[in-house]
Length: 330
Image 1 (cartoon, rainbow, N blue to C red):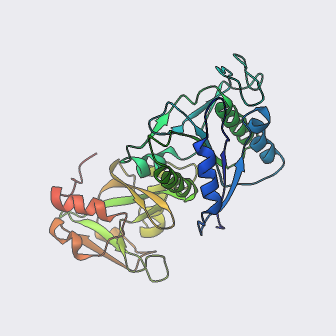
Image 2 (image 1 turned 135 degrees about the vertical axis):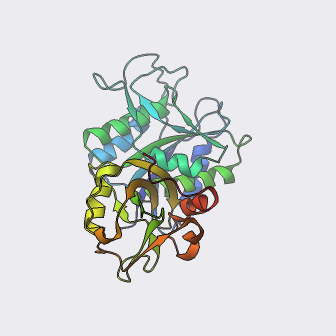
Image 3 (image 1 turned 60 degrees about the vertical axis):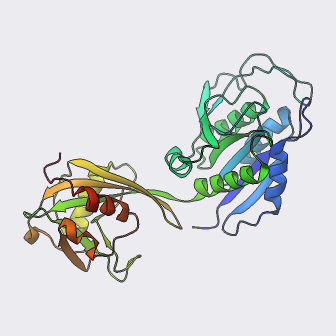
């Protein structure tokens, strides 16, 4: 995977405001060197031409991994991630060209709204404890919303994979520009880092011990221990994915019954959502190690005798305190 490319846009001042914080933050990002991300910036005019610009770039073949539109909201008390863009004008003031459209569709005969295509699961996990940000379902009906709708409409029409999000910024006296810049930088990393869903098998023996398997030297994280399983492929649900993985890794034909535990983990190069599924009691002679070099059955008091993968470890820590779930928990 190459270096992710991100376009950040902002606007100059409009109406009777003395400045626009999105323009200030845009200027900061022109100077920031995020070594593993290629950042480009665009100051959009507060008028129809500005609202068209990014959609036209996409139509002409410009490629980005993500586009983050920044705008100023004088009434906001938090940074607002806008979930929707609406195909609707309802301007209460004129843009910088003097245009003021009180009603009507932005694009005729199109869908009434588009939803952002960023991974909301990841954003929710990364920002869940940050009281300075929130999701919004009302981006207004000014040039900000117009820009957002036109960008998403072009993305969806072209089946483009670029992730797009509009972010409304509060005034500086509500949240200082250093904090706002830090949040936007974190958001950029959040949107551009790969996200995968993986499944792990909770397998018991007749003595209520659980199975742990060691990764071989030729794999990533060699000699670390894990729940057997793997990545959920496109079109699979977690149950199908784990059945396939157990067939490939342990030569087992198993139908997992229930998701017992879930864990979100931020690795340096990706986000992982781990789902552990109950697979019941399996006799040891049914298991053939195909992709691991060792296996161990562990009682509760033995859980820390192996070196668990970082994503698996929080689940193990919880079970060490609260007890391992029952193999009969369906």
